[in-house]
Image 1 (cartoon, rainbow, N blue to C red):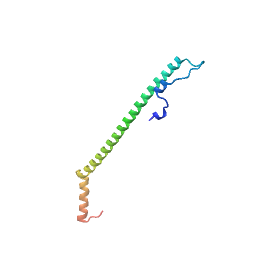
Image 2 (tube, one colour):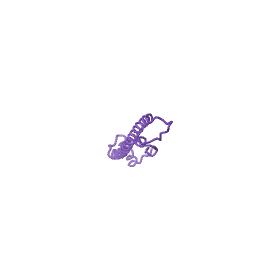
Image 3 (cartoon, rainbow, N blue to C red):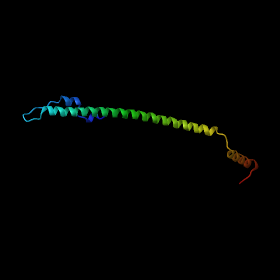
Image 4 (cartoon, rainbow, N blue to C red):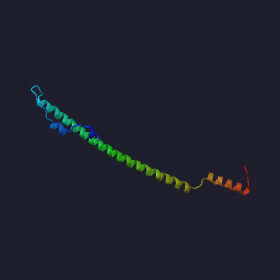
Length: 110
């Protein structure tokens, strides 16, 4: 993911050779500084790899949870349908039905 934007690897930094000039830098100081850069680069690489693994794991968990939500919603819809078809009529439902039957039988108009 991020490796395409990083130009140097820790190994390339370690193996880099500089030309020494008469008025050049002290090789020991350059080596010491480059060692610190290598250590940082290595740490950054391990952090990036850890984050990429975390992202991958979280995306997998997210996908799994979305599927679980879909499944639970389907079960909820099925249970609602079953509840509506299997529920016992209440007193209000019975009174409404009796009222409708009376209208049909006795021809009462409201």
